[in-house]
Amino acid sequence: MRAALTEKSINNCTHGSVVRLNDITQDHPMSNVDHVIQDIHDILKSYYEVARKRFVDNICMHAADYHLITGPDTPLKLFSPAFIVSMTPEQIEDIAGEDAILKCKRLTLKKEIQELEAGRKILS
Amino acid sequence: MKVEISKKLVACKESLKGLGADRETQTEQTKYLLAMAMEFQRIVSLALDAKYGGDAVFDQNPSLKLATMVVNRNETFSEAVEANGHTFCFSTARPSDGMGGDVESSVAVLGEALQYDKKGSIRPDDAVNLRTTENHPDLEEILYHQVLLDAPNDSCILTWLKEVYKNSRGFGLGMSDPSLLAITMRKQSVNWTGLAFGYISDIVTMAHTFICESLKFVCPDERVRAGLSSRLAESLLGKYKKAYSFVKFLLDVERSGTPATLNHYFNDNLEKWYVKNPNVVSQKSQRS
Image (spheres, rainbow over the protein chains, first blue to last red):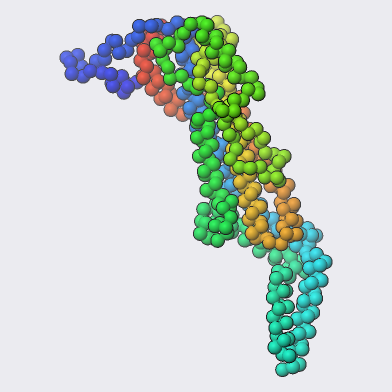
């Protein structure tokens, strides 16, 4: 309060630091209701500023960052070795087990490799 | 003959390699999945630390640069709430600048305010976009669907406040009812809901896209990946829903709870306001 009134003050007279009366009064007085409305407005404005900044910080830090990104239990941390280890053998077989076609291919290739290596041995 | 056999042998071995690691026994299968999970978490670590040089995949797939995307979106959210979070623009006009006005113009302005209040009166030229990402098909059931928001009304906050005050005052002179702050704050922050849910929808989409893309990278086998995705889906959705619940919680606290703050800036700002307009202060002291 003092700081801003100082802007309007005059300091080089004999009465110390003074402010012109006309600088701090107005000619059109407000009604009681208008005063109250102005009060409400100013309080709301002040509070809204503080609440807005707090709200944005909380949304970003709590809802987003903690729950979704860097917190201890975020979706990003789900697919981990712990998750794999928690699966039953059936579930693991279901997901990672080879399907019949792949199994067949693998068996066939392994057999062929065996035969080819045996053949190479005989020839050398 | 020997050369031919050698050639064939090499080809067979290459093909076998192409089928990926052995997955016959349970141990082999577990090993296979564990390796994938560890690789996945390695990518997550690099992404969260924004160490994009740690793997070429970040250059190939920008949707993996999660930390950067989230930080940018946070900034956009903050700016959006600052610019469009309020229902009515605060007055910078002072009483001597003619707020009093005549009764007719006040009523006209109020009429506009009420019209603005009606649902469905979104003015396209004033609308504000709530989302920066496209919806991911996996997330349809939980994403927030409103896409546009009304921009703040810049003409009649004092008229609106007068109306609220006149409709809810009790006996006693002057000093306003503390619950007025709660009532007006609730109306003034209507847009916060859309902005916050739009924001969290974007973050959820970014996180989910990151998970899907990383999974593609560590697990090229489509069948295995499909199996993993479906095992992960329920838990993932659960976590996304938790984030939404938290947004709702914060909205409830700020908009339906008791307005309160220990932040001294509240008083500092009030003082600054009175100081810039000592006319108001002197009128106050005249009253008391």
